[in-house]
Structures are given as structure tokens and as C-alpha cells.
Length: 303
Image (cartoon, rainbow, N blue to C red; front, side, top):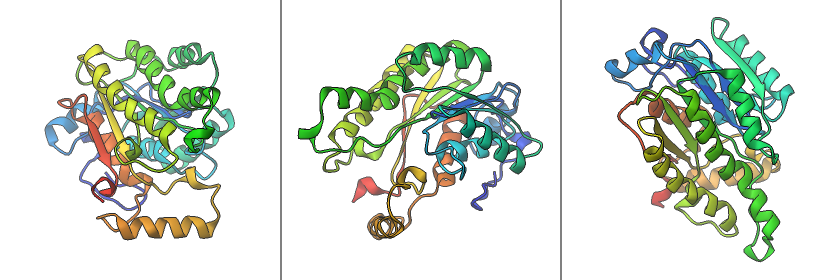
């Protein structure tokens, strides 16, 4: 698989098994007729990815934006490169349209569509149900959705603030698993991949609210892997990734932060979305993995 960032793998569309996937990130990606079933580097697992259903990908509002950067968009690109039929979803219909247009421009032969779905509203379960009614059966669901980081001193965290902080990052993925599982074949070839962050294992001052939900996703994933079996449920735990999530920082602040991280982590580099996208592809493809937390964090948990 060749990603736009130049990372190259020996994966061709004819070898993949990601047919229909849905990527849910407050941006959702659905693929009604795709050829992706699972994603690994072995020839055995690669062969099953081109015979399945769509992939549905959901991303955070800032990840699938006009600049088309972020984890959700990177997973969508990688899925298309593997021959998948992709459906993307976001709370912003205009953002969905621009992202679909950008993906079609980069992959003229690819199959991609998108629908709006706002995960921040009290009607979230019904809205998710409506989304899957439009997408129909899929093979894989990828949830990368999030919202503005709720990092505040714990003494300033009110009940309403804490509750609101978990709507998109905790309640929504649980409901996506509940509703979305009904649109997946009951088979280990089907998967749901959620997203957390290394703050779940590596404390950061003033991040107690975010860390609580991030850590909760570890337990959610393992339990869902039992409750939804034989459908596989896994979790990707990215470290710092250079996305639009940090767009509110000044250029100088961001450069200083990125340099500090690069100087500290074992890999000596800050991850790009296309780097982390490989973790999602692997978890979709490997039908022998469930209840697993895949850390793609530049080794940040080690330092």
C-alpha cells in the first residue's frame, strides 16, 4: 500500500479484503460495494479484504476538514488504496462533501460516499441509526471521532463539563458499536475499531477528564469484544499526531511543542496521520485479533 506521505507497502487492491467499511469520526465513511475484508501484510489475510462489504469511517470535526488532514481522512485514503468502498461521516455536511470530493479527485477509480451525522446531540442514538440505515451492511467500522480536548484543572470541571466531554469520545462510540454491530456480518472477518489516546496510560497535568474517558475505552473495547463476538472489536491508541486538532495553537507554539516531543520520544519524530492509519488497516485485516489495544505513539509511553 502506498500512502500519500510516501510510505510504501507491498499491498495491491487485488490483494486486500476491505470491501465495505464505515469510518465514523464525527465524519463518517461508508463503502457499500468495496473489496476490503481485513488488513494485514500476509498474503492469506490480504486475500479476504477484496471480497467483503464497505468500511464506515467516522472522524472528529477538525480531522476531516477543508485541508483534508487527520486520522479519519488518512484511514479513508489507505482503505481506498486497498480497494475498499468507503463511506465517511461528519457533523458537517459541507465538510463531508469537500472530503468526498478530495478523495474522489485523488482516487478517480475509488468508491466513496459520505453522510452527515452529528454525534454531539441528545438524539445521537437515533442519528447513528439513521446513518447506518443509509449505509446498509458493512464489513468494518472505524471510529476516530472526537471534539475539542476537555483539558482543564480538575477544580474547574463541573458536572455539565464532564458529561459533555464524554458525549463524543465515550457515549457515541459505545452506541456506534451497539447500532453498527447489527449491520456487520457475525463473523471474525467483521470488525469495529475505536480510538483512544496515550493519556489513558501516561498522565498529563489537567487532563483528568479526558484521561478518564480515554482509559474507559480500554475496558469498553475488551468487553465489547466479548459481548459482540465473533465480531472483532479493537482500539487504536495514538500518541501526538500532527493534525488539525492543534490548529488553535500559533505556528510558533506548535513548532516548539512538536520539537519538544520529537526530541523526547524514542522514534525521534512526530507521527503523521498516514503513519497511524496503518494500525487501523492491520486491525481490520487480521481476523485473529480482538480486544486488543494497538499503540501507535512514537514510543511515548516508554519515556
